[in-house]
Image (cartoon, rainbow, N blue to C red; front, side):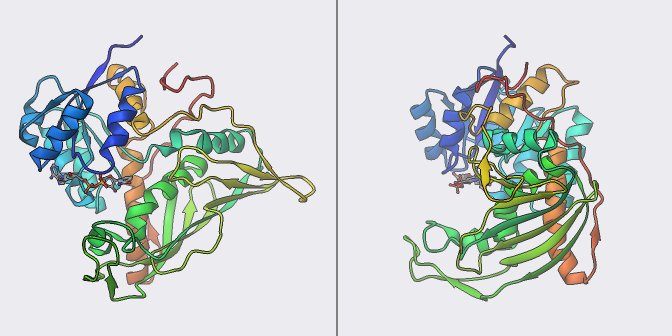
Length: 368
Ligand SMILES: NC(=O)c1ccc[n+]([C@@H]2O[C@H](COP(=O)([O-])OP(=O)(O)OC[C@H]3O[C@@H](n4cnc5c(N)ncnc54)[C@H](O)[C@@H]3O)[C@@H](O)[C@H]2O)c1
């Protein structure tokens, strides 16, 4: 059994419980402290989970015990908190999106490299049984050579239910930076890196009316595209059509379809760890659910645990890596760039396809 790696959480908001609980499931992780801009939030979580609350983020970064900083702050603080963690000599793992611009993401990666520290980023839903079952089937040739994919995330926005939906419509918000990380990361996992992106983006509504509490009745200006469509050309030769929208009333559509020379596969919602994978039968009469060999018990923190193994064994590549996340940021950013400039965007980044997770591993392990 490898030694435990000590973790400190920065940002004790909505998603943090998933990490406080999730990290307990992985033997390699030892959660020791937490901090937030609002010290009361950190104190509440620290008491709930039996760890130390730091009065300030700076205190957590100075804590000699903390080895990985898990950054669960709001998207616009991701790059600055990652930078501060690295400058303090800590490895950094961040919630999605990794950065709001590829320039910010590149600076974080360069700093990590110069300090010989690791950087990782959500999503880690692809460690789950859903995407891993699809990945194993693709690698085993179940659809033949992948030729195309469709990815749809279409809804009418989050102002009817989210308590503070303003950030979704600010610069750096929108459906692509909110949900794109799940879909694009799953596509890169299944089909490999992307070479170029063509996009068309729009915003159907110049302002949004919040109907959730506590801001019911407040109008918010829309500063970002809220409907993004485009194509991804993969290095492998496959192409994907992507639609991400906060402007449309949902209609039943699959989240992700892969088309190959031999068959077609439905991939489950990449925002979830689990879900059925369906394969078109040879005669095309049925769409058959594939058996899931993988554990259905993985949850958020899988990416952190996987990075912890790589901290102990540096030659081992971790899967939810900064390089993968930076490639995804550049892809997401390219939709608007392509739409504005009227041309395809050839990407400057690439990444290795993360290694498949062996089906034989127990839920609390990610290394054999
Ligand atoms: N809520 C979800 O269901 C969900 C799901 C998946 C991913 N995420 C991602 O997780 C991240 C956090 O989302 P959330 O819903 O928990 O947001 P939240 O607003 O509930 O919590 C964010 C917390 O970070 C703190 N914070 C903000 N800036 C900070 C800074 N500079 N230093 C220290 N603390 C700071 C805030 O005080 C707050 O407590 C986002 O990137 C989001 O995209 C959220």
